[in-house]
Length: 73
Image (cartoon, rainbow, N blue to C red; front, side):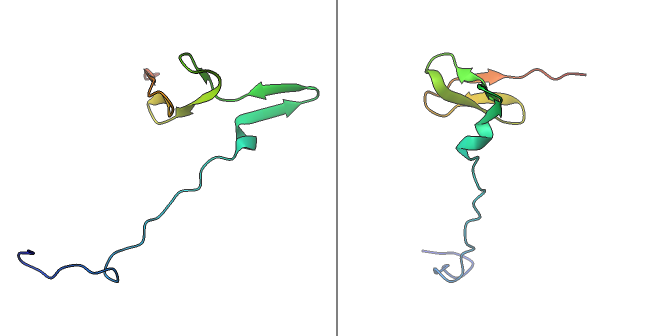
């Protein structure tokens, strides 16, 4: 039951806008013979699982580990 308006059908809905994710090559930096990881690894999951960088925190998508970053003034 819809009160105060009509029921939205599939044509009335806006399509979801998806942001492109990071590619695996953007997580590493190659210099000569060495390979350097740009993001930090998760302390719980170990190597190979990166912490995602957000505005004010670092988050592991696998286990849910969170580190809050302090503001620099």
